[in-house]
Length: 416
Image (cartoon, rainbow, N blue to C red; front, side, top):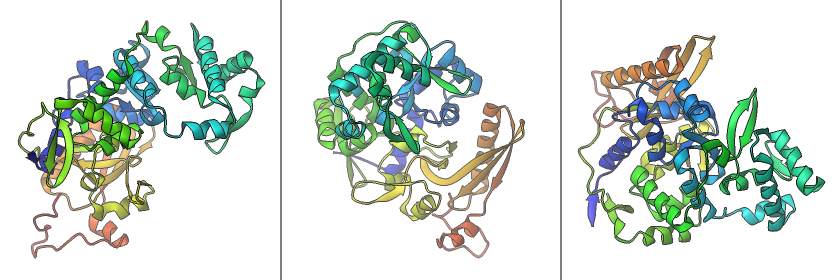
């Protein structure tokens, strides 16, 4: 069994995510595909995620790919959350999702008070309503009620702090069926369109084949990984994920990463030399943070309390509460090493505040300043950077950062 080191694994992941040598602007769409789509529940975060991987890209470039050139498509994707995918890959992703019914599907039907045939009826109505049209959410709801009856518009589904119409869960199901994706906003209102109309046609893709391709894409971007980690990322049952990975046969191999056994593509071999010097400010829900495992390696356990204080933790199976994807993070050499936020002050000024988990060396500080300058160019705004003293914040959290040498700098092993 091949033996790997975590430092090298994270270095390879950084390279696959284009965060060592960012891709040129003309490869923007390819980059989105190579990382299995970009999480886009918050569109500004999606834009910053792309900017961290594509050199010199501007917000207008991302918007143009979505709404003018239509080479990117925004839709409901992995784990039922909004993602951006390359348009030419959309049928493949939706086919994979259709082969993996959501684990809570029965629960949703019970809460809404319908059976599967009624869900299919609403999904069919959505497809009919969007054919050749672009509709707001309210307009689409009216069209569904008109086609299937008033029962679809009854407000029974709890979401966003209120009760939503019964047809609401059918939106995600229709997206997976290839009948719905997002169109450009109408003012501050979202719109939906037919993917076949929007991207100029639709092709059916074999479901099991699509799922196998997704598993290989995941291992390429986030591996080595266990079948359970793949299952968590794709929101599928671990047993089913294990079957998918095993179906890849000799295309995958099991490796040992410092005692942690996981799967990688057999073509990967051993990573190259350790990547050093990568400093990135990643936005909320960046796909690198959401998809990388194991969490204890990505986010050192000694910093877990910081994540909980910022309400950025989630509870995994077995009761383990750990920092997940909601928080903007400082990423150093592939490991979560701090937190940050940004505040816009007027039209031309953005304040960026960084709270590292340990003291930054002079070299790291310079790299952080370059990262802030990159964000400044992407946002087309002046950016001011402030770095919080980690020792003062550590004391407020009851954490100990380790011993210091007499001359002041942190001893080896604590400098980030």
